[in-house]
Image (cartoon, rainbow, N blue to C red; front, side, top):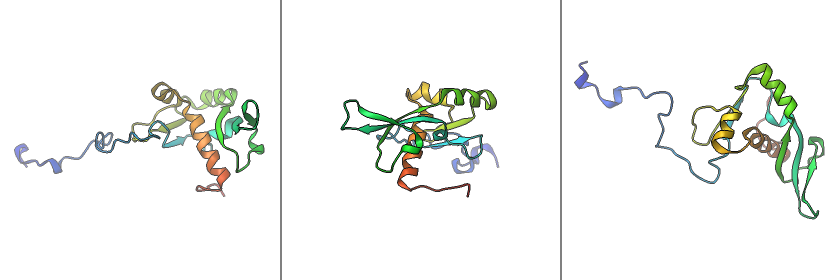
Length: 145
């Protein structure tokens, strides 16, 4: 077919960013990870948690630290401290792309460092908190039976 007869519908869209500008989400959760992918089977960021920070409105501090085994379904998780030595070892073994994050708009996969640079937040920590909240509530899909 001559070039002047090619219709726009005949041209395949580029794989990356073909929805760019069409479906842009800028809602309140736009700066939270929408998903993640690990090179390590069955690994999720919450598995490196040293402790969780939960609301404790009755205490002077307003928060308290809990180990994973101490968490209950009533806890409101507002922070997490991931073990830096565990993460350092994983980085050494698998490289910086051992876990990739995706934002709400489906942009390119990002390493935890790229996420930090773009959003100024700890993407692994945010995923860990989301996953643990889901586990405590009994929701979500379970794998690895």
